[in-house]
Amino acid sequence: MTWATRFRVREYVRGSLWIVPLLGAVLGGLVGSGVFHVERAVDVPSYWEYSPSTASTVLAALVGALAALTGFVITVTVLVVQMAIGTFSARYMRLWYRDRLLKATLAVLVGTLTLSLELLRRVEEDFVPNLGVTLAGLLVVVGLILFLLFLDRFIHRLRPVAVAQLMARAGRESFAESIRAAAAEGIRLEQAELHAEPTLVVRSDRAGSIQAVDTDGLVRWARAHGSELVLPHAIGDFVPEGAVLIQVFGAPADGDAVESDLCGMVALGDERTIEQDPAFAIRILVDIAIRALSPAVNDPTTAVQVLDYLGELLQRIGTTDLSAGSTQEAGRVVPGVALRMRRWDDFLALAVTEIREYGATSIQVVRRLRATLEELDDTVLPANRAAVEDELRRLDATVAEHWGSSVDLDRASAAGKQGIGGPAAQERSAGR
Image (cartoon, rainbow, N blue to C red):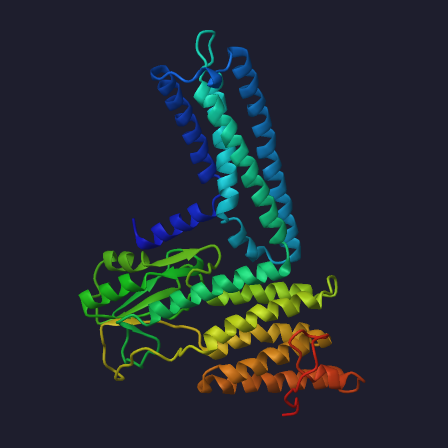
């Protein structure tokens, strides 16, 4: 099994809502069978014994209650999905349906259901699985507690600020992973002109978005073959079937095995993932903000809350040197991998352009956007400040266009950490 296949399988398992509950159902049946054999070998105290009729009644009631509660959890899940898609972004669901608490709740409920069914069929006139009945009752209590935690968790996660916080955290983790991969030995972020045709061109065998790349595996392959591997597409790019996936310089151009090995180190899927693509987390945050700014919703406060966490994520990116990476002499093949990665300008433009465009008519949004950019201008690396200054100039032009003849020009031109309503503070002049 190739690395790409393992990655896709892992992604499917993490996103599946049926695998963990199915395992819970199987485990519940096995535990019920095991309890039966334990009961045959041990004696329980008299105060722990049930009559056959009582045990049958309790277990039958548990089966009905657990079936109803499981259905209710699924109903709540569907409602949450509908509300989240309508309020935020369908792409946010990629994080939501991976939640472990949801899967654990379903697994305990379904597992207790199969346990109760297994015990119910074991009840006889001369034998009652007393330990099993007690265990089933305890698991019902555990299931109810998990359900309450699940309900509380997802009600709170319907708040825009909670969604923004989750996406920003995912973006930070993904960015840290991408920096780790880029800093590895044998990885180059800038590719010198090789002045030669590639020895081998590896093309995609299917259409899809580049979800992840096995950089360690590619480096090992390049060194073993004395080759330079060039990936012309960034993670997150959509490539059609037959598109160039990897260019190989200096490797023998023989056999399909080489092409198959290299294809197996680039995972393609139906949609982008956040694992190695921090820009996708920014994309989702921006989608949430601009949806809130649509005339049908008209909720600029949500956009301001998203900007809070966008600013924090951008600050993490802007204070990291993204120009790291070895270089090479032009025309010379050096074993290793050349990756195409986003720079600070790319992240910043992605984060602010559409919010500035769709929030131009909201004083609250342009004030918070200015405060975010001014804060970045003070904190990012000196080499990154030119891009921030450019975005501030673009914001000035946008404000002048939409508010130039308005009595509120002074307010739209000022910075505000809370948009509108924050305490007055000394602010830098908006004129540039």
